[in-house]
Image (cartoon, rainbow, N blue to C red):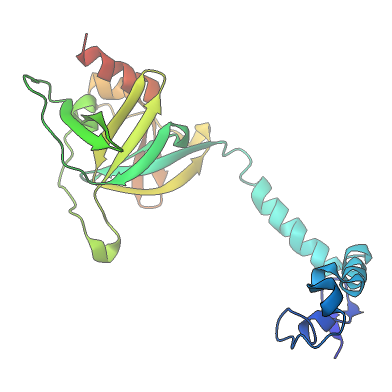
Length: 229
């Protein structure tokens, strides 16, 4: 049976689906002994060229035109952040700083450490890494904590971030998707934010039913380094 292709409105002989190795092919084609696979057969190649050489239909061109228009509408959304939650507040950092996301690990205390920013160290791939509290860096009240809920896909995680000044681990209540946005969408941080928070937060985004604080990783890193000076 010959097969009609809607894209090009042509008829092709798809023998590879009947006697070949594709679809419900029964592999009865005598050429298989020589070519091994349909993709090596001259018939398969010639029928494929019919699809490539045939003029596309108006409907097909329009469907691609609509898809390209949809992408073009987001051309100004050149920025992206990985979103995560601390308590009941949402934040975001650029993906380039994310080294990995790992399951929750035990945090080991550091002798004589009096800093609330440095929670301790965690073992990751045989190496000890500093574990940092973003909440204390920003001087924020995390609010009511939303606990881990496996049924709803809510898991506590640790994110490992790398930058010019080092590699850090941050415990988070939950991590979600990558969100794309344009700089024009950013709003100023709330006036009630602490001074440190205002310096680290580039701006606030509204994403569906929640607000995201976009963080400046370099400023975040500088505040961490300042703890050890």
